[in-house]
Image (cartoon, rainbow, N blue to C red; front, side, top):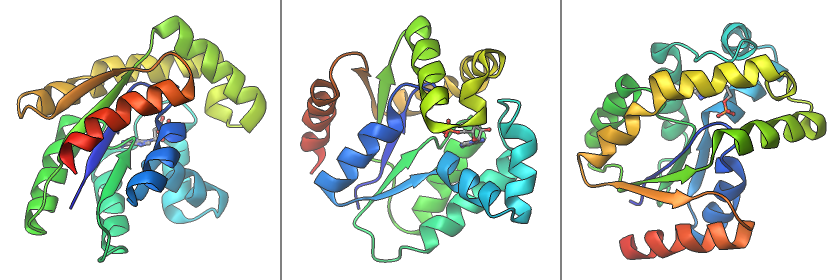
Length: 191
Ligand code: AMP
């Protein structure tokens, strides 16, 4: 299996690049943010719980997120591989993913990390807020909190994969095609 973590702060372009990567490499795209938003729209119990955290720009608790992610993986028993987009976001999530994938005799092959300056992130997210209607993109304070949460809780996950020689930083600024080509160059070393 080819399991990839697509990493980076909010607004780095993970969602956009995931769409292109899953098409090219025939992987299953699992975005925890998208799954939470679907649950919110359907007002499921999970959605209502996640909303409390998402609307402030905080992380949904690990146990809830980990259980949800594992259930989503189980829905695709014949997948060639997964792109995990927005997961893991904490060390506990990264550790649980390793243990879970090990039970399936597989692992995370690499973490592709999109790097974008903070100023550019805020600009992109505010623009996305106008276009997508996502509440957590429309408010500058929530955006700033999400970036703070990324630095305080999520950025450490990069070190977790770096220790395993699986961390690949990619410049996330430039044309979509240029960034995609940089991602593919690394991906192609693993297929
Ligand atoms: P995203 O669409 O990836 O920007 O995620 C939107 C929001 O969903 C985040 O700000 C968190 O509140 C929540 N979320 C998404 N993925 C995770 C995760 N792996 N752990 C905890 N919360 C998450």
